[in-house]
Image 1 (cartoon, helix red, strand yellow):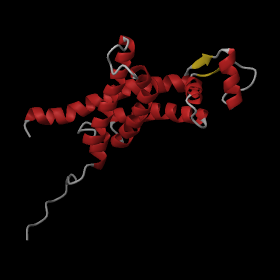
Image 2 (cartoon, one colour):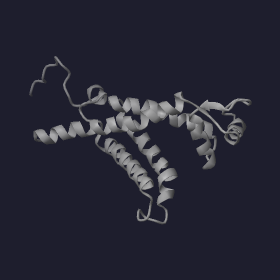
Image 3 (spheres, helix red, strand yellow):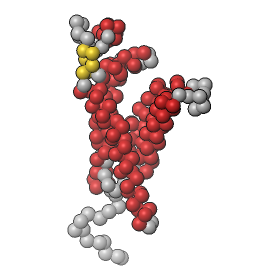
Image 4 (tube, rainbow, N blue to C red):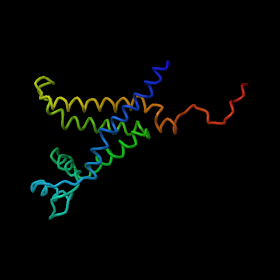
Length: 183
């Protein structure tokens, strides 16, 4: 393997991990840490789900996901929303440092496909990219790009610039070990 191939094999996965971090951690932080004010209809739905207390119209932005998941008919949407928020935040953060990268990239790949299916695919239905408004087309391609990046990390691994490489590399001799004597 020449120098440019070796650099590409280590730098491209790092760039993919950084982009996935930038795409998933800020939304995860937003969902878990920011507060939203809900309209009366949304408030009533969230109270019925047990996501917020009666008499309040504020809650974590996470409950925007809860409302979306309820609209899609997902069972226990408040738990699914918490799961997605935690997964975006923790998974993206561990992915950028390269710890359990294939696992987290696989999860982000699955969530990316679900998110594409729920948000971008309906806009493309019947148009097959032609005649789709530019903003919706850009959203679809951005989501597809993240799916491809996550799939690349799942297939190729995190590269040498990762915690996985330093903690779990196999076939390497430990420092200070002596080579085995040939028989």
